[in-house]
Image (cartoon, rainbow, N blue to C red; front, side, top):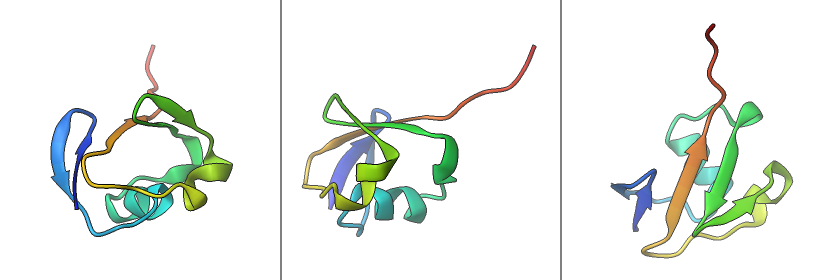
Length: 65
């Protein structure tokens, strides 16, 4: 299915948000995720289905100083 990941059109086969994050290589521990503008807590990602055209935003913490 085709969806937008951080504003970039992306083709995936995953059917849930958790599967998509794993397939895309994200380390799921310290991420903030949103689906179609709605925050999705880590505990809900495995039960959050994806649909054609969805918009996923993934924010990972950055280190620096």
